[in-house]
Image 1 (cartoon, rainbow, N blue to C red):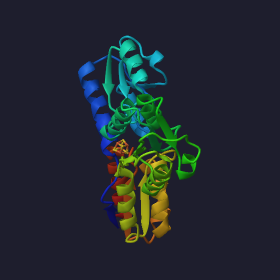
Image 2: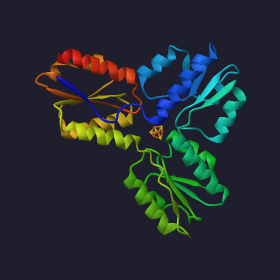
Image 3: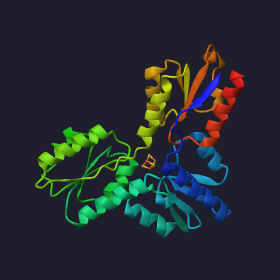
Image 4: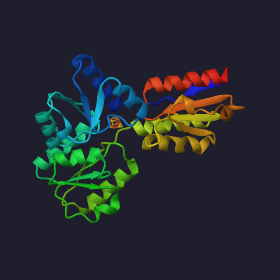
Length: 282
Ligand code: SF4
């Protein structure tokens, strides 16, 4: 049995960077507790591995003790939350993904120029809550173009996007803002290609294999979407969290098996799955 990996899979740049920064802190800071504000990564197995090295999660800056190394995860936080962490913790590691930082800074600058900011995204998502904190009086987060209709008149607006939304949604929002604004809006596409690249690579491979394994958390939305993409072309597509979940019966009469992984799935877990597939196929 041949095991084929999709061309793009696993950790995105921002998540990989966040985990590396935390691992460096584990090496350098010795016994001091390392606490991430919110889960560092949506993968239970990786959280368990980091937990064994003294990394834990807090829900609020109030929980950061004076000896704590506090970590801001890839989604970023509001400037106020960052200040709160800096006041309470011994040190703050800012692992905000640079693609998210860019959106925060664009919003901040537009607000300084007294302009409105429209962000296409989910207002409840932590990344959006952080961005709004950079321009609290000027920013509107809308899920789609229909929600733009409810906004007041917009002053020389900036239109940006949550990093993980669909391009079509962003373009429709930008068009709706154009109709509502007093001047031509500044439209900056801030969508990150990591999710789309993984889906495109899975789609390209799914037509060539007899079975497909997507490795990722059942609560990870990008992993669930990857599964849906694979299922379009390969009926025997499965979402698994660990190699133990592979059912050998599913591999009967399978000559080629595809593998991909969500943006929060660590390489060591992917290696374990590939190894198990090789063993079962031998
Ligand atoms: S999905 Fe993109 S924006 Fe989000 S953390 Fe990963 S690289 Fe950064």
